[in-house]
Amino acid sequence: MKSFVGFPAGKVRFTPIPNLFYTDLLPKIDDLAELKLTLFMFWLLHRQKGYPRYLTLRELKGEGLLLSALRCIDKEPDAKKVLEKALDRAVRRGTLLQLDISDEEGTAHYFFVNTAQGRKAVKEVKRGELLLEKTGYVEEPHIERPRPNIFELYEQNIGLLQPLLAEKLEEAERDYPQNWIEEAFQIAVERNARNWRYIEAILERWEREGKT
Image 1: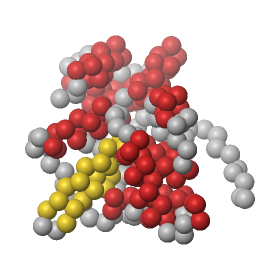
Image 2: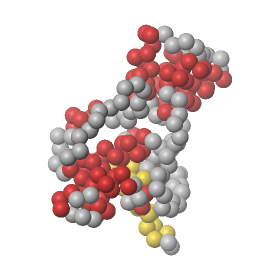
Image 3: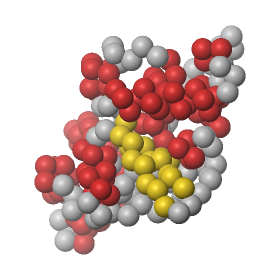
Image 4: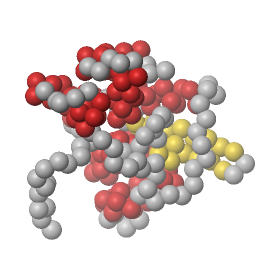
């Protein structure tokens, strides 16, 4: 076994995972492939931007890092077969939502995390209110470039960060999507309301009432 050298010092990026994952899901997941897939879905979708956030079966089968993590589980040399079984378990458990869309070219399989945004997107597609683009094979699907974190946004748009606000900003960065935070800062600047309370109120309203 190759040992892990440890996390580096200084600024590193994080992937938010709901507390319910640890208190409700983790004790129930008894399959290593399903657990690895679930964690990868949170990571991959967090790196996306915009709405809705999802991955197709074809995209997942093109994720080399994911396939490497699944390879040789349960003595199965074909990582893609392990992936398919893990997806089936995660969908049956309710962690992931699956949406299959067929046309003359065949059937595309879409996977969403079972969050409020994921459920909303699936309902909108079924009602014909939201169209999902046709996707082809990609190595790194929907990956965004590095973006400024919430502390940089604050100092760029409001001013010098006060130590008492740091904890609140950290909580907001964990609780809200990056694009929401950026848009809330932009709205505050446009309305000449350059203070955190105004930005926080926007984010809380979007979470409560829906961003649309």
